[in-house]
Amino acid sequence: MEAPAPGAGDGRSGSDGPGTRIEDGIERARGGDARALARLVSLVENGNAQLRPVMKALAPLTGRARVVGLTGAPGVGKSTVTGALVRAYRDRGLRVGVLAVDPTSPFSGGALLGDRVRMQDHATDTGVFIRSMASRGHLGGLSAATPQALRVLDAAGFDVVLIETVGVGQAEVEVASLADTTLVLVAPGMGDSIQAAKAGILEVADIYVVNKADRPGVQETVRDLRTMIAMAQRGENDWKPPIVTTTAMTGEGVDELTRRLDAHGAWLDSCGERDRRRRERAREEIAAIALAELRRRLGALPGDDRLGELAGRVAAGQLDPYTAADELIAGIRSAS
Image (cartoon, rainbow, N blue to C red; front, side):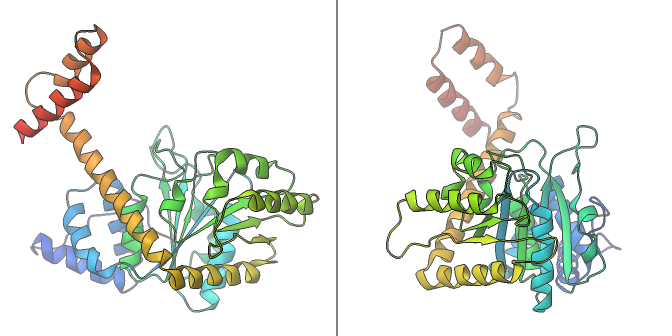
């Protein structure tokens, strides 16, 4: 189902306490209430004061969803492939959530393109939740709020969560840190295989998807990818990324893609790689939250602009940056 617009209410009702409101909102989201789910995602995006108690309440409910990331240069058909995968998983009776990260509007700060417009086929399906999220200048092809939004969808009971990156090109490898399986999409005639090598995407791809396979040059693209895969250093039991050709507009190759996704999921479970990836995901999430809090405290130090003063002394050669950083951290500790 299509998500209501961001910021549509905060889930408060009557004279119930905050804990009751949070529990009620989570329960309704788990029961399939798209509006309640949209409010929770909006809370995450906006950094609402209730974010911490909500995340605390959601924690025991997470860890069940299968997370698939899709990345690739603009124009390769990420949204079309995403829509095709939604359809394939819905045919299996699975609930599917989509987090589609779009460029930020310089005027509203919201998602500029809006995959809810580009995936109208699923707009009335109550087993599908699609949310466009603005990158808001965050590098890596994702929004800074994506990890927490993923937790919300996971806790809400979605079987599969698809994360589609912004399509910024060589920077969007961050999705691999969030996904159990990462799809790297390329298209014939766009030079994507060369760009993939330059971007280091070779290391993050679990499956290559050559989309728009009805175009000329598909075999050359597949050959280039095979050459790059062969050059990679891998152990005997390591996963070797397969190459799947698709024409997502017609559905051609999508069944093969889902079979490859299933095979990778089985491999993840058999060797413990899924648990390792999820621990690493949690590690990165904790570090990001801690750094964000540190930056917030830097800007909230009492008294004069301590950071500005130290910067002036470093620029004048009166102090080295390491000592300045130590003094800044000491000031935060004393303030707390």
